[in-house]
Amino acid sequence: MANKADVVIVGGGVMGCAVAYYLAKEGLKPVVIEKGDIGGEASGANGGGVRQSARNLKEMALALESIRLYGQLHEELEMDVEYVRRGNLRLCTTEEDLANMRKSVENQRTTGLELEMLDRQQVLDLNPYVGEKVLGASYCATDGHANPFLVTYGFFLKAKRLGARFFTHEEVVDIKLQKGKVVQVRTNRQVFDTDLVVNAAGIGGRKIANLVGLDYPMKPVFSEALITEPYPPLFPQMIGHARGLFYGRQTVHGSFFWGGFVGTENFIYRDGKPLFNFIGPSISRQVLDYFPVLRDLQVIRTWSGLIDQMSDGIPVLGYTSEVPGFVFCAGFSGHGFGLAPAIGRLISELIMDCRVTLPITDFCFSRFSRGGDHVCSCQGNATCTIDTAICPNKREWLKSI
Image (cartoon, rainbow, N blue to C red):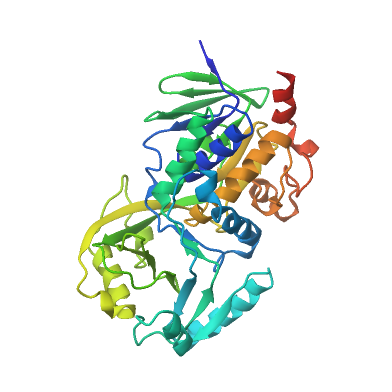
């Protein structure tokens, strides 16, 4: 006999947990299916950056709103998530880097983001530990970082308290459609009758979409990171490189987190999560070029993971007219953590009321299936269009019962 679920969310990472929390807060009882552990994939392996700068401009409204929500997240979740809002420096080491960064800063400022270019002395005034290579940097004072484990678990624990159900080490194996609409989700252990499925499966999102006959251009990209032994406080800023060679931060406990790329990630992926012995040392050498003060620090752990890289670098969000009841929340291309509070709330709005307070037209699935002239199934701030073929309107449904 099948169980009943108001909504089934596939994926127990920060996105799935955030969606579950905001839905449970509204009175629904979502079910979350996670094939591994809560936060066991990218949500527990990322750098914890909470930034607006250096984003695709289409994401800027989401990033600005997420920054606002992160500022009150410790109260919302009743947990200290180690959120630090002390800026983000993106370091430039060549004249070409500086020229490109100036153009990028100008473009980003048109969205209302407070962002500035700093020369070398101004960088040193903020962070006196940068090495001689640094010629300047962009600086966003309202960027910051948080602990990705605590944020994910904060959403998870609060959602659970509000009635959300979580099933870990359980895999979705089939999504049944009836007359083209979602009616059931089958796992390797049980069956749920439902009219709504949220695909928040991250790196597994493409496989979940395939279960309902959909596909989107996403590929796995290998990434590696490391963490050091604790060190007395040096600097609070999130650090990035102008060309994305590395990124990192000092945690509130003193350890330094660093992640990066060496240019061969597309060529070394195989099934599982292999560690390649030349990547960690390569990241370390790059970091030491910019922060020589860290030369004697011991690396205590390295790990690897997979980024769900989209062809256009932005996520897939919202309903699709092809399969009524199937909701996308995937494809964040390695920078979804910072957007999680805003995304969780928006997907909840969409499900509860068939409207969103921030436009998500640029992120609709139909951009792939219909090209540049696509009509989004979740058009701007409006209610559901006829293209969705279904309007769950969960808030009205809740009132009726």
